Length: 297
Ligand code: ATP
Image 1: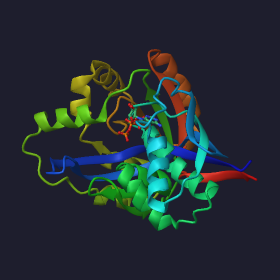
Image 2: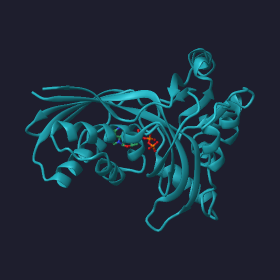
Image 3: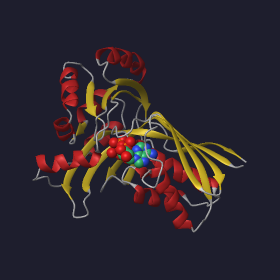
Image 4: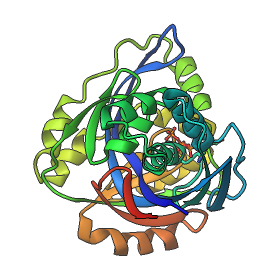
């Protein structure tokens, strides 16, 4: 039985500038993504029907049509006219609804795995197009590294990083709905226009001066997310006295602390003691996007 094993990374937004809500319901963004070394693993076995099992952090997620993995499989079946099926197992390490694009990572992993499992031979450019149909963050989950994303975040330009970065993620057991945070943004900022440009951050990222990068980091969803979740405001207030740069990851509730790559592990231990209600995860970025680890025939 043929099997394909894929891993796909979580992301953090070093900048997330948000513009007005568009007529199609999306917001224009100017954002900078970084893929970090927290991975969801996906195994796809060739089978006559389509089935999904989830272990790890996503045990309670639905495994029906509403799951992005099944959506990705159906989209690929439709786009290529294939009737082939797969039994898919996902092991989740990326927190669910945490602002780290775990669902997008799984969708990207499924596209990549099934393209190989079903011998479809779609080029990367076509997979990226399909990824954009599944969600705004899915193309970046395929690409990885560091990239500037415009439009709704799916128009990507890679940035060559000057150095590795360290991160500590304070993740929460309770997620936060991305649409709800955007809705709250609209209420708080009814006069939002075009999103401010992230040009200076993109420039700083080509170098190795971490303080120059940290100075340009900003997230326009921080205020609406903190309005919805008091724990975000409380933790950020406590971290304001801390010398490192703290930023909300995506739409939250994960809080990300930016540091030197070699400092991440010890800082995570320190933060775990300081914030016992959260789980502190050390990570390094940038890392590669969704990638095939192994194929068994
Ligand atoms: P983003 O940062 O892209 O806004 P997020 O990290 O906040 O995303 P996800 O973990 O990607 O959030 O999941 C958002 C919602 O998508 C979940 O609440 C869940 O209902 C749904 N979902 C569907 N498929 C998956 C999946 N495979 N993994 C996680 N969530 C999924």
